[in-house]
Length: 402
Image 1 (cartoon, rainbow, N blue to C red):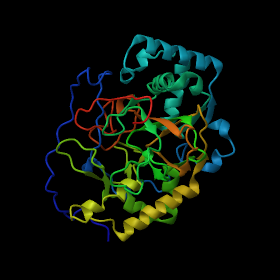
Image 2: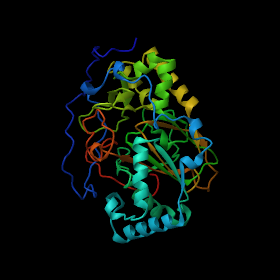
Image 3: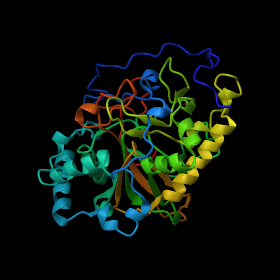
Image 4: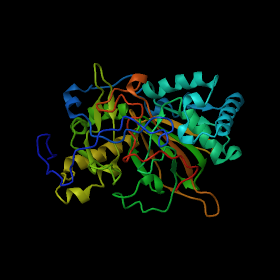
């Protein structure tokens, strides 16, 4: 049986009171004046029981691949010459200002014309189908430095960038650095060429800018978690129920601040707080299956047979419903982590000296008071909610992977 909510797991010897989130930031460390909140347990008192969840979800968030596979014009935007010119001018002006890239904000990246499109897009990402593919950013012409500025500048119109790892990377780099993907308790899979199973990142939105493609593979799949929920309710309601219970432990892989635990106990599906809350999803099987070092020590329960079956059915359902997408050089994919799960096929790079597959990544926060989802976490109202923040590690935005 899966561990019950009332079962008392052994208290880890290093379980100390967690330090409060820093409210005052030092501009020399956080140039835009905001600090990433970081990973936190949910507010268990605000987690709703399975009986409160909808039997079926309707509307634009519950899309099927068949709705879009034959209609790329419904989710693809080709940058016009005028849009590229405006973005280029904004990037040049920011570079000329001498500001650090970690200090970029919407106010410092003026897009008087294209900002209107981005406002509509933000609403579509947060409340609609939850994804878009831009095509045609001239990354080869601009190079990594200017492309990074342009990319992060666009991102400021969609959300607030948050740190993606313990090093403070707010501009991430998805690239094979030769790390061992089998060491899932230590390695972040985006730094390998291994397959990524369906998951959601620790931010409201995620962006990927393709700088270099692989020889083979590395293609993108995404799925509406609301459609996945509907199928689970029809075919495996027992699995749907199990996924709403806060009995799932997620590994933090050592990316913790002083006094914090090495894991989070959470659900996979939640309801937003307040009246008529939507179904929110948070899942990554690599972070669930990498905890044997703690379960073997009796610090947390191991995955039960029911949980292992549920994880398998969840992945199979995602695969069955997924929309396939290929990113070419100069493409940007933005998608929601709140109601879209995404995956990546394994890939093989071109032989050296050809460049390795390289995607620049953004994690973006959309807080409650700016139209974001009302999540059952204590930082739901913070500008930079979520992300990964270790103590006061400052943000960095390198042009390439390190």
